[in-house]
Length: 468
Image (cartoon, rainbow, N blue to C red; front, side, top):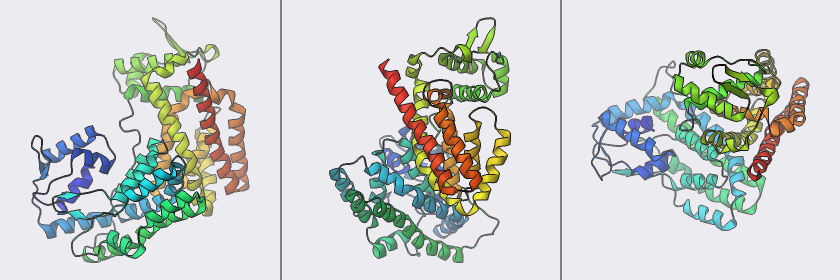
């Protein structure tokens, strides 16, 4: 958010004296909380880009030479050309299923209301103000209906990475898209209302592919006037879904749980002391104390004063009340959201590797050598897929989702993953069999079924726990 606003100011798209949107508008535009907006506004003020007054919106105080600003901004944009275009490609691949899923939770009346709210489309930068395009807001509102916050956050991050500033003297790619292609989003909502999966997904894919067709010549024109060294590269796409959700003690607890699950700390083993853990994680003693309290609450370890903390898998005692603890509740919600989204992203990612499936085979083989433990097979399969994905934004999303899946590692020791262990390990074996046969479709199906089965099983388990 800071980089985007600073770039707009330095290149003259937001000029001296222009008023920034309200904090609420900034929250909507960047899909962040009010605290993040306040931090960014404070940083922009400290760096001399804006001035603020009580009860008034921030005003741009940076005086940029327009031509110099455009040159700097254009070269910065050209440097991240691949990020812009690959982010659009990733939207083209992921958004069809995500919007379709969200639409299945909407009534016809709700879809009609969202369709109407998307027009007229407004991409224009105004002196003294700028707005989010209504079509973007409509898509955000639709994604919220899916009841998975990761859908909205992922879309927001890809959208920001793919949007290009429009400089004076150049054809506006967004205006051209609306003028020549019409209101594509209207066709999307019409198809969603009809309940036609293939038609809706086709319209959604076309919407993002069509946008790329107008952005490419715009970038070509900028590059012709503002060439850059081939060695200059812009920042890659990033998505940090853990931001604002992660605490150090919970992160350390997940790592210890992973080590227990992999067999590094076996049943009956004495864990390192608090002081040793503090040195290992470069953390304070109080943070490690909280870490051990979290793991104790699970019942997979037991701390005895004066004796240390010992793994006790053979004598686990699970107290359903631990799900009421905020850290576990938050981790569980994020884990379920990641499982849900992985069921959408994974088959898309596997499909992109179809022409290079040997890369997946080799990646899995290498990862398997480094993985240990009963559940290591699925982890190696996922690492093999991620490593073979060439589209950088899609790979980054897969990596982030895979990290979030570690937030549910404690389920390995009880509940659904224990009761349904044979089914899950069977699906993993099916994926390995398909991998050996180079059967991409069967491999994708087994991998996807693994995560979808786990999602259903864990939801059933949690429902049972709530009734206890």
